[in-house]
View 1 (cartoon, rainbow, N blue to C red):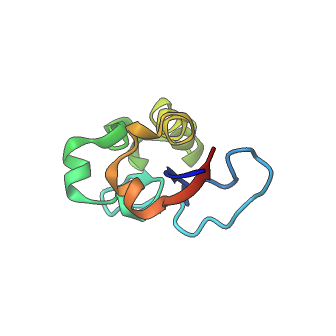
View 2: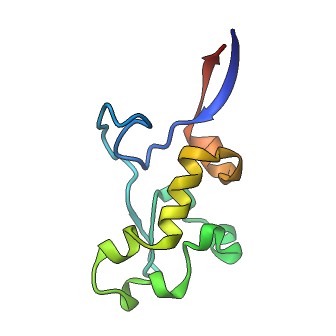
Length: 106
């Protein structure tokens, strides 16, 4: 068996196989600029400047939505979580730094 690194997102309310709910310690994060992010670690000026995963698109600012659900179910958030679950190579290094773990894989 070999050990590999995988992301175990602290911003997701359940395990990848949906078998167990978990505590959401860092979800969601509200920024002073009026954005909601999956976690506090993504609230960095460089990430905002690069608009990582389009999470800072102006349409997602709380002044431009009627409910938080509009943000949670937006194409940007769906894509962010899809990548965390299925294409972790696209995840930001901050996700790797704060949410990765070594797992044994055959």
